[in-house]
Amino acid sequence: MRRIVLLLLVTFLATSALIAAEARLVKLRVLDRGKPQAGIKVLVNYPDGVRSCGTTVTVSSDSEGIAAFMLPGNVFWVTVPSLNAKVIGKQFDVPEETRGEVRLNIQPREWRQEVKQ
Image: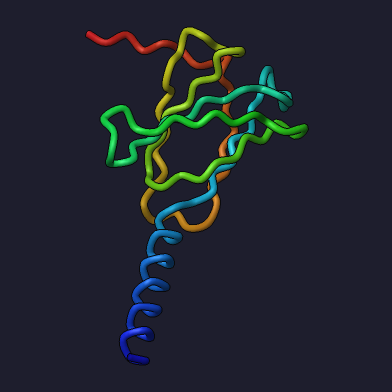
């Protein structure tokens, strides 16, 4: 019985460590004309493997302009309606070899809408 409990505990801890290793903290610093913007609503969408549209989270930037969220994969899309309503879903790719937290400066006002042909 002890062996089974120990085996289950080890399996649970190994699985938890694997999940934690895949997820990473992403900190987006929201800038407008080079200045950090506090209280800006940022919509983040990322694939979750369950729904075809993925998962969308809404985060707000803090007093330093930082909007933070946990990313379970390597790709996500950002929309900042208050600074650029024309660009919906600016794509960001995090290299697979990246470890630890990811920090990015984003300037939504400078994003341009891509024309698909």
